[in-house]
Amino acid sequence: MRNILVTGAFGQLGTELIPALRKRYGGQRVVASGRHLPQLSPDQDGSGPVVSLDVTNSAAVLETVREYRVEVIYHLAAILSARGEASPEDTWRINVGGLRNVLEAARIAGCKVFWPSSIAVFGPDTPAERTPQDTLMRPTTMYGITKVTGELLADYYVSRFGVDVRGVRYPGVISSESLPGGGTTDYAVEMFYGALRSKQYSCFVRANTVLPMIYMPDCIRAAIEIMEADFSQLTHHNGFNVAAMSFSAGELAAEIEKHLPGFACEYEPDERQAIADSWPRSIDDQVAFDEWGWRAEYDLPKMTADMLKRLAHRLSTH
Ligand code: AKB
Image (tube, rainbow, N blue to C red; front, side):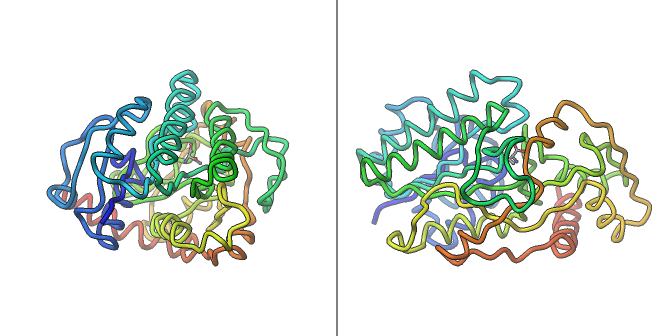
């Protein structure tokens, strides 16, 4: 039996995708890889293979794919939007170079690939409300530019080489098990930590900033469902819009306060405000529903209640 390789396995998505894949397909079949290997958490420790892999090293990517007899790659390794503005060179090298190396290895070794794009492919000229699947994509961040390039490259590998590459455009991802790093939507996760730890948070975007978000269980389900969809039913392959909820930073604070009375959120916008302002406020994901049946389960109240419960438990036990 051939195996599944996850790159960027110790980031925000990987931390929860790895256990989900191991539960579904078997622990020993799922190879978790990262440039730097962390101290293994109890649920990762011993639950499956772990390997050090720098995705910018094309030979190492192909070697790992061959050594572990990989048939599916979930390629998550990337630099996010805010960090991308601090290091545009590295962002291009890792996001575009890394993807190209993975696609080449997939072409040579006959693998199927999942690659996440982002709402960052859109820019200030894109319709901001219920942004359609196929629309203007002129992002103003390096991260967004790498994601548009990635979507085009992934589609090229589908049409030119017949490689099975699929993916979705994630909105901001909210999760209880690990913090995101270097993104613009990070405030939506940090706010929960601030609320539980000290009943206060200083938010780096304005209260009226509205962005699309998704809760991690939906995010993981989207990755698995698109990969298990019937390829012949897909017209699009990469960059499916997936929506779950849209809310302002102030609405999130108010929802948290319902559970934690006295929670106080202040707003001190920084340079990330401009990035947030260039992205859509809500997403139309009808095409994902039509082609592979996508439907989100979590809205703002349901996500907030679950997130507070899980994070409170995690913070009290770590
Ligand atoms: C970011 O904020 O950079 C990411 C994203 C929306 O892709 N969370």
